[in-house]
Amino acid sequence: MARIGILALQGDVAEHAEVLHALGAEPVEVRTPAELAGVEGLILPGGESPAQSRLLQRAGLLEPIRRRALAGMPVLGTCAGLILLAREVTEGPVESLELLDVAVARNAYGRQRESFEADVWVEPLGPPPLRVAFIRAPIITRVGPGVEVLATFEGLPVLVRQGPWLAASFHPEITQEVRLHRFFLSLAEASGEGL
Ligand code: GLN
Image (cartoon, rainbow, N blue to C red; front, top):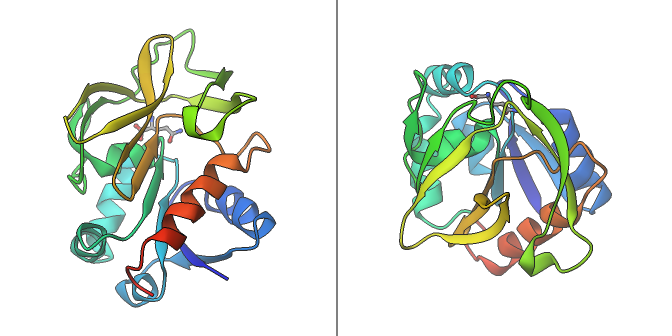
């Protein structure tokens, strides 16, 4: 059973844990470097990225997560988690992990459409499209050459991958979808890091 960490400082931790349970993985709440050491992959949940980044620093987790991720640990970031992973963040006092070679603009999906559900076609998952929620979501404004775009929505990238790191501007965990997490678990299984 894969032990998958969920950063549990702030945000929608329980929803990710439920999906992992449903897929037969073991969710582990991560609040300390010692807890991080025991997991094979890490989910950075949605929430409020400025708060999360402050708490990450306070918990002494910023550098340990960076180190593990650079050593090949699979990471899935959703919404605020994408912001934490990004190298460049506009609109916000967010010190990110500066891993994923993308730029993101926080809260960029606009006022009238701050939150909405949508069907997103994800190439590696095949049909049907993934039903997901955008909640005051960031827009990915730049994608580096080593970053693969796995899904777009209205012409903009919304799901990207750089090696073992996967990040989405949407929430896949609150619409009864398990397929993106299953894909993430397959990345975690394929990577020998941390085992
Ligand atoms: N707007 C939030 C931020 O900038 C992200 C929202 C979310 O995670 N649903 O951190």
